[in-house]
Length: 124
Image 1 (tube, rainbow, N blue to C red):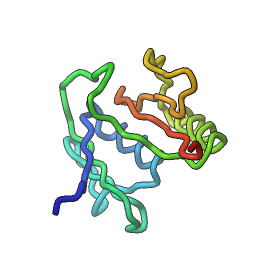
Image 2 (cartoon, one colour):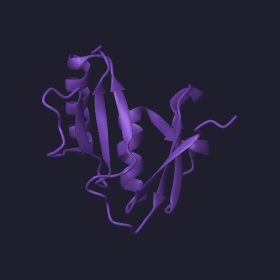
Image 3 (cartoon, rainbow, N blue to C red):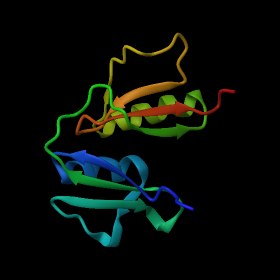
Image 4 (cartoon, rainbow, N blue to C red):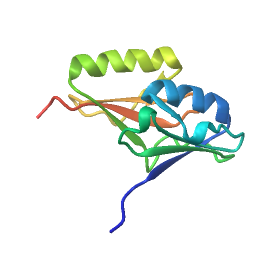
């Protein structure tokens, strides 16, 4: 049986992306290695969680990506606090044209422009 081990994001500035995602997720570079073209991040302390690889890419950022990260927050208050924390780290709010009437998610872009969502998982 297969499992998802690593999610890969294309980035133009690996060091900038490493700085954002390590602070955003409390991850660390695997084996302490930060390379110019490729760095794999893992949960700090060896805890559970998917790995996040940041690979140098010259491809343009997709305005409506086919694949993106969903980050889970416990409830609406946690979601709001996390969105503000991520924005303070360098993320930007995305004016998402596809928001439903009462969304349980907020669309952000990381420092490289990659879209991701912060989800309020407290809703039923």
